[in-house]
Image (tube, rainbow, N blue to C red; front, side):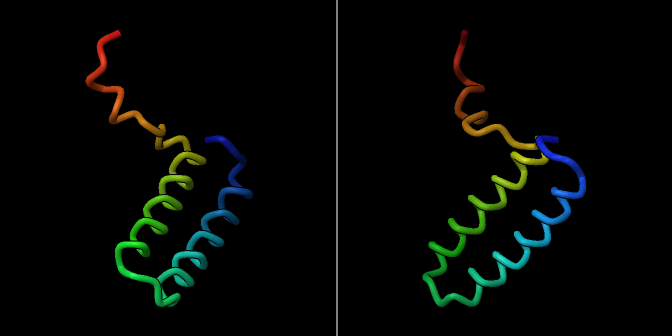
Length: 62
């Protein structure tokens, strides 16, 4: 985890509010999914469950 549990709890609460705002913003569905996916990945990164570009690097031979 890249932060303490109290801060993570607050981030999760705020992320849920953000997702609601995105859903009711009136933006196009594809844009909505991009906003939600990217923010979800950021939260996963904070929880140390996501590494940007990790899927891209799996096929690369070192």
